[in-house]
Image 1 (spheres, helix red, strand yellow):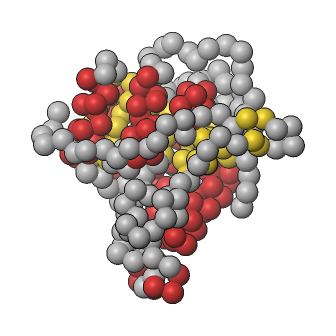
Image 2: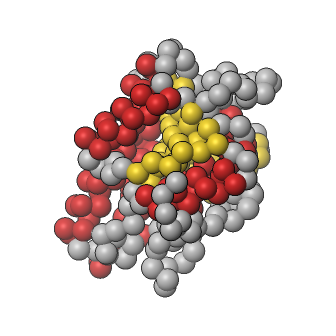
Length: 263
């Protein structure tokens, strides 16, 4: 499925009120990049990882740079863990303003291999776990946003493969498993975004592309990830819901280095 549109931006700058943006999967380079970009735009980042050390490392990096971040750890494939995470955020912060979902599971062992080398059991676990974490997190995030009684956004991020891919794989080669899941994530995003409570929740996606490109017949330049994310979580943006937008990276993705202790 290919759905890439140019977003319509309002002329006003992003809102300055304090907002809490949950970024899932900050142990991956895409998640770390999204979190640091949103912090630079003035948001308080709730940095989730499956690894407590990775969440701590990213939160420490943001706070050292003068931003605001809080580390979180949870297994998003488990519904009770997702509920625990959001209940904690609601008790502490009153809910979230936005979710940026980049969470990605690196295994099972053969998931990044060519199709003929993927074990059937690995394929089953890989596809089930990724769709489960997407479903549980998106549904609970929408509920949390509605509780704030303010307009909020859910943004899924796909593209460019995983820094945990085998060393023999090309840099941008994700393999059939990850490519298939990225397509499923985008399909889910469009479907969910076409049937949200549009008064309070917008659901859209970002597809990362390797370099600056043009999109559509009008030749509009694809924006960079940092600026696009800031616009998409802005409550006064008029981008609508149920769309996939393209974004390029103005600087390379870099992996997170885990901290040695919890914050």
